[in-house]
Image (cartoon, rainbow, N blue to C red):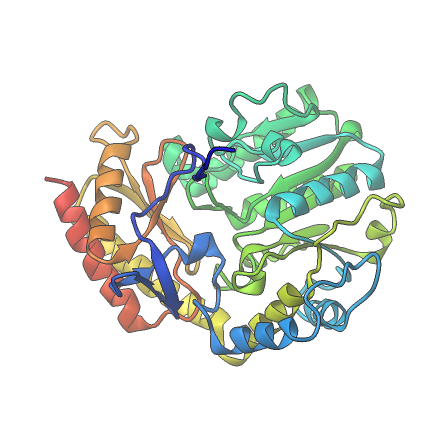
Length: 421
């Protein structure tokens, strides 16, 4: 047989040119030992920073005792301990958990549970939402056609309602909220009968859709309609959970309790782990055999998640996310005030974005791309998002300091200056 070498799929594209050799806290180092401020955090995953000593120690210890105990075959202590600990941070009454590996898997598990528990088939999502790339999750995703294109027909039973994206709509937040709730009522009257609707899925902050926070009155309006019609409200906290928004859960900003919570990303500081949580009375309506998975609740990932919870709570990282988020947002708004090409700066906690628009208000992905690249060249790693790629987002680890925020803002200032010329 002739010798053959393999390479990664040509469709995979890196957001930055960095070949990472190691990570430490808020920094990534390449193979030439150049240091970068990592304000991507693995797309919001490395919540406690790269290689936090507590997380590393917990994972190393667990690797030496039990790597994989398949949880529908045998049970293991890290999974039981994590479940108990999560009960202390989950909303009151949400006391049953089921573990898988990725956000997409957790979304699909939540949809399966909602359909089985209600006996209804439809799900409502919002324009710009991102819920994953697997088939059912992609059917719930409207953050960009790249997730949906070329794979149809998609799963039926999904209805899409407008999101209260005030900047895009050219409305105040109150006006956008009123508009989106009216349109949701219209959708329930014209597209998806409440009697056919199992669940409403909502991200407390649109992620891939552009880092747009859900106004609290809109979330409360969803809760009212869900209660009125017996529809389950599902909070997709894959990116917003575990302190990212300056509260432990993104939905905490509204005071609304969802029926199902989905969590992943920052849960285990970089180890693959996700979960869905629901009240006992709801979770027991899942049909036998409908929950499982070979790698779900992996012992090493659970040990890392336990250490992550310790670090978040003992180091006060939720409060730090709120304080540093305010500092970051203020800095980005100063940059935007000096550059009219940035039409909006928005976010919650350490989940902040700058939207680039042309003079006529249309999306400006070209300038966003130049600013993104210039920042990378200067040692600041960022990501873009939004359907047009004209939004540059910052997602530093929750351990970020004021000095690191200021350093990133200074680099961003120079990057935006360069991109405008």
